[in-house]
Length: 406
Image (tube, rainbow, N blue to C red; front, side, top):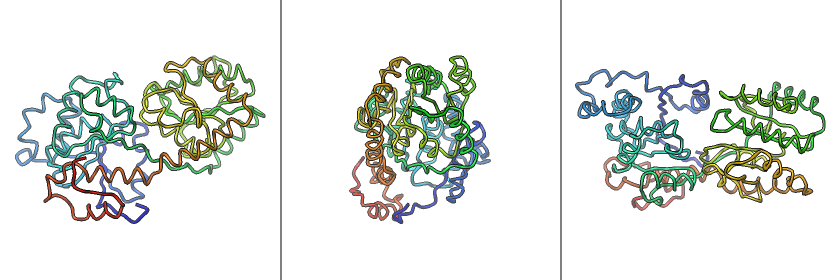
């Protein structure tokens, strides 16, 4: 970490780096930092020897589990037992189900389950009824803690699992301002777009994965309403995904394709943000959207649907606006037009957004809070397993560790 604190070797285990087109998105960053990354699907079953496997006592139970969970138990348990990690931090609900039981069977003393959005029942396409039992069982085990990144998510997980919301740790995302530099391709693409669209009263932007949950077609419909009200406006959409072709066709059908630039997936997000006057996100489900935070760090006001923790990612009325729960394109256009009708309003909101986001979502605070979770609950029950460097590391981070349950 920047203040000199160091962790013992960190290892990353993924289900697969090939299942999704963007599954290796962060791989280069991790490799550059010297962090080993492996796919547990490539590991041998039961470490190659069922007779000595840590899974053997639970073998009869595997048939009752969803396959993704059973697969992780078969592949991952013995690997974790041999690695002997002091903390396993499991990201996203899918891997919580898959890897949580493996970590327990391997005897990992500290397990952090990390939800990054609303709970599975709110996203029916990813929900199986057995998830209720698995999640509750994991949380009943010693040394297991649930962490989320928004107060909304904490309340929803608590309602779903019938647990005290105070037992769930809320750690807001830490976000750094994206550099505003561009590669030659991005510069050329914007220059051509700028020449085509001419002087613009408003550049409406988006940075999102173009899939169903982000509702990109609603975004295009809202953009069309904005252009109907403000004909000199234009739109920049940064991101890719399965709905990109549909979004482009919708823009064509609505007659706004000439005023829209689909920049695709880009490593120059900060550059594209510097070209936007407002960023708009109309998701159906969200955790705590980094896109909203990154825009505000760049001095760009935001407009968002009230999905999940999205309203917690801005200061409504000061750094941006929150739409109705089921936003209507015409109403969104009215909101944006009302901002433009107030001289200097967007500029002031942008200045407020940058200051507020810098204060609300610093990376050092996220890191300190995460280390605090690693050190909090369950360690006092396992004194022989506590690495002596951990307490020193926490002290150096300026955190108070009294061995109390988190």
